[in-house]
Length: 403
Image (tube, rainbow, N blue to C red):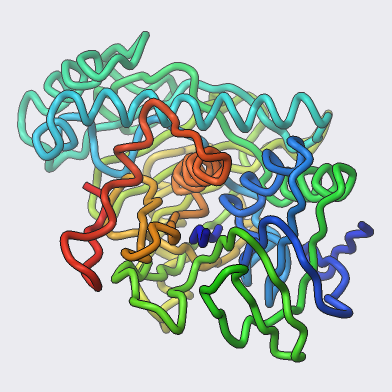
């Protein structure tokens, strides 16, 4: 079986998590190409069941642009529930809400079980209307969210921040944020403790989708596995037709007085969208307001402009925003759909699955993909898996995107 994904002593280099290189060939039950969130979550869950698991990545754990400090877990997606319901129906919106809530619960359970100090915290989320939104948009969104089963959602006349120039918003309880690099470090330790293996600096040269599946690395090592998890198309067989489009995510951090901004997750439905969350600098110190949302597709040569746009937007909304103390950019692997994608791609053997989406709200999608992959590798299905793993193709060589 081939399952497609992306998302020992471990050392950190420039805020990146590195594992030892592969020194020889191996025979394992499950080989995972890509140490992103979905791959690491799947590896952790499988290793806990005493499955023989190996994770390899050409770069560090967490992807090429590791070291992220900002990630939110939300059942609020890039598109509002009203849009989702109109496109996928009320049943699709309900299933999406259930799976997103399950992903947040799963990450929280892992952090608690493994005692991972990753700053996991449950928070309220606030979806703020843009001045350009049509009248009644928030009430339609609230009604759609309630039909999807999002408990506790309500409309507030304004975001709960003194002096902020924001209008009405929808409050979504039970969201969360965490430090992804610290989380992945804890998950990596747990995988190795359970007998799994993780190796960085390993380039995949070719894949032979036979029985067993054989991965040949750039160094000539051969890894044989019954199941393969990879974020890339499988060479030597029909492609799956699904190619996540990379986007560059930009984030700035501005110092704010402690307590001046209530702890929560904030999104504005503008174009481009904006998100905000807080990060503490430690007991007795101030807090940093992390602001993101400048995520252009493909390569971007306007990083300085993106940072400036985020800073200017933040200062118009948050009067207590002070000096800029942080700027960072990372690559987001974004699927063409808002749902976590875990799709069969090898049509003749039903052996290829593709999950996409890693950072930001995509962290939630990456977790869903890891959960779906784990269950399919076990030969089981989650109650909502059909939303993420549709039939592979109508005819050989044709892949149908999720939904």
